[in-house]
Length: 489
Image 1 (cartoon, rainbow, N blue to C red):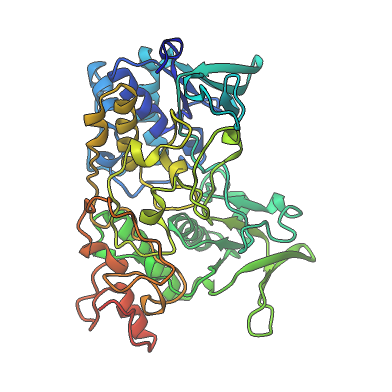
Image 2: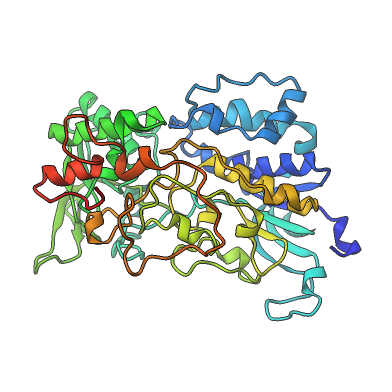
């Protein structure tokens, strides 16, 4: 890079797990980070659900370069097999990391980035563009300020931009009207928010692990507080992915989460609405009626709701990079090279190909979106994936292309892209367990390397129960409903 630019720091946007790992890798490479964090403390997104226990053990949550810095300072590592809460990740790992002098000196809190551009260049101008430093504009305690950087690693995540209730991607009609009675993500139902939900009729919307955690917390509250009713709405009909592989899951806590949710659903203590695509919310006395999109000539409705918890995923903030030349997948809003690997419309059988700086690069040289933001709207991101991303990027920025291109990812077989549609079985178009992909399915480029993780244990929810005449969990569930199976056997 041009001599006038190489002396500048490398900006890291966000001081969460992946952002701080990026800083550690840059420091390890002799490069200078500048970390801009919107919150008042490290991992402000993670802090919003610090009460939640993760299903991945410590061994998958600690970056190698970060650990090297911590070990040098005399840090005592936690038990690698233990399951931390989000709060413990902050208190026992991220805060000690942020307190290290080499990172603390680079860290700026309450610096919310609003725009990124090139100094003297708008999006249209090309000649000399790659030699100009990045300009990062941020809202700070001292007012609006600008910072110059030779490269930008955007680790702002997606958690603070939750998806709305509306099934069509827009807020449901009335969603803003009832904003005071809608929570997004994972509120502390059994802790600080207990009084809000106790004795209420609560609707949970979503079909991922966050929704499962909310439902189980509410079921515990219902057992302890009379009058608490738990209602669950999902857009699809097939819950096999969320129920998961049970004992076969190589992350046992995640398998247990699915097993407990399935038991709750079968117990009758949970009011379940399948194929419910929310369209509107309307007042009904002191309560809310939730209307779905019309189906077969009728409009489904869930009546008498007091509170709504939306756990329907999140999306990246694309506004800050509007003046940069970014190349995004048109529907996932991920980096385009990742899209064929992580598209939740397709079943990837629990695998993800290792990826690094090349897959994360944009036409805007020196700008990288990493972590959850690199996946766009795809929900299947793990921290270990982000750690490998920033290791590769740091190597590339240091000019060590051999190390940058040597991308590796070691995850449990059931650990990453075990996604499939919640509507329909593989025989209706899912690319599951070796079954043909739908005609519209994206095909990865021919140069794509082989996947890094074996697939069998994570396919279609995991192996079938021992007493079932089926090839996988999904196949067993479909047959139990009278269908011919999932089509993958």
